[in-house]
Length: 586
Ligand code: C2E
Ligand code: CA
Ligand code: CA
Image 1: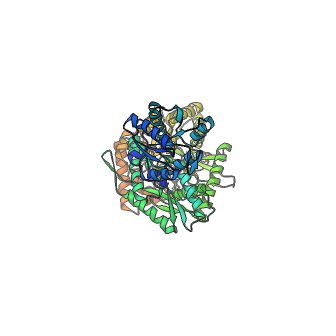
Image 2: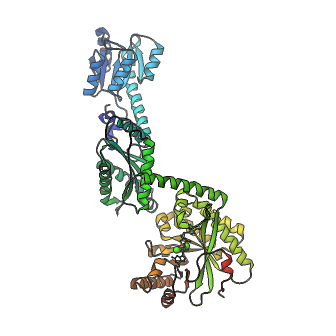
Image 3: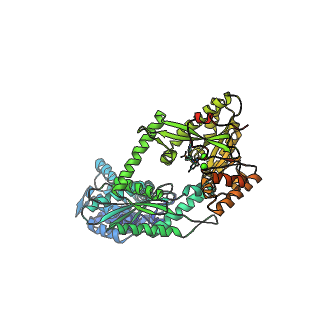
């Protein structure tokens, strides 16, 4: 079996045509054999033996260079190879055939009964070793057939080790091999190599809401489009998940690489049809360019990855070129990640509480627990400085546990003090909700603290449920089963889907502070808040408005029928003892 694409070493982007992929189950009777033998008498015998088996076409050449020419020009499944030829001897003949056609099976037919030579030939890539005096028609035919099968499975195994099973694109292993080869060639050429790191935006939502099969379909379609958008000599690889790498050689300048990225963005613009749904996808792309000839393949991939992160941070659906500033950023991020891990080990977090008040008289009805990081530098870092990193690294899970444990201890203090116990809200990140063990862990923490779960409200944002659809619904119901209340946070900023409100067991709805900011300024915002309040009333949900900073806003909210709120007008988040000074609701 021949495959020009494998040998040229370039075309990896295209999923290989069906018969380029060695098929495992398929077996085929060999039909074309090349006999390389300079002894005419031997050639005649072997040829007769093969011909006797029937159905196999035999071509005969006398020299290695003739054999190599023949292999380039014709499709041959098996070479019967004599080890002593006029222009090559011994293992060099095996090597010579293999380098002319790496996909052809080789059966050595030698005059020498030499075990060492037999083993060495197999190690060099021959599939079998026969000695001339022991072959007969049947054994020769069988040797050819088995050699072809062995070669086929060898190719299949190699193919599988080098390709992504879902898309047929190269995998990381093959990509790095190609990249290292390209980098090695750089020293000789004056041009650059570009690496593009591509990550689909919000792909997780597709997987979570439409299922993994639909996600796989989409990935396959993206891979096909990616391959089509590239030149045959470019290499596209899938790293797994929704991450792809592209290698572009012979790049003259940044512009060339940016143009490739542009092509990739454009090829995604056409909507994707999956399960009868029209989906739109975008990608964030990071680009790194080989600056100096001494550049390392690993560094190029790492830099492209860092640039991709920046593209995400800058709003996704865009490309970013790696530069020295980014390297600094990447280092800072790494440093920050180390610091955050250490902070978790050392317990460098504290929980502050922001009062939730009733609007009429400003009395305390509840509080929201908000985490802060006591950074070793002495500053108290707000969550927006480390929350994204905590989620990416999964550190939010131990941090979230700490917040809940601390909040429960606080609840316990309030419970012991007779009288009114404020409702306490704790935020849950989507990463926590994605964890199947969430219910068990939260149940454990509540039980250990011995508090009334009804006093606790767990807040999740709209995007959490959107991204997690079915699984999150189960998990949230499980939490509800523990007796805690559930709240939907930042309402109005995401999809604000009524279906979700109806389907999910939420009892509290928190209106995002962006609407509060518009009260008295923007008529639409007042209308939206009024509509949300009406909606919540119908669904028997409690509404808490966030971010109240002025008396004007408070007056508006009362006018619109809101009863509960939090915001700097009343109090900023602060340590728990601040709440003790607050006038309590009845
Ligand atoms: P959030 O849940 O929407 O929390 C309310 C945020 O609004 C808090 O920011 C609070 O300080 C701020 N805020 C309160 N009143 C006002 C106001 O009148 N004006 C303005 N401009 N802001 C106000 P913070 O503490 O920086 O927290 C930011 C976000 O970080 C939170 O938003 C929440 O999503 C997340 N977060 C905080 N603590 C935790 C936690 O323990 N776990 C998780 N998963 N997320 C947390
Ligand atoms: Ca919240
Ligand atoms: Ca909020």
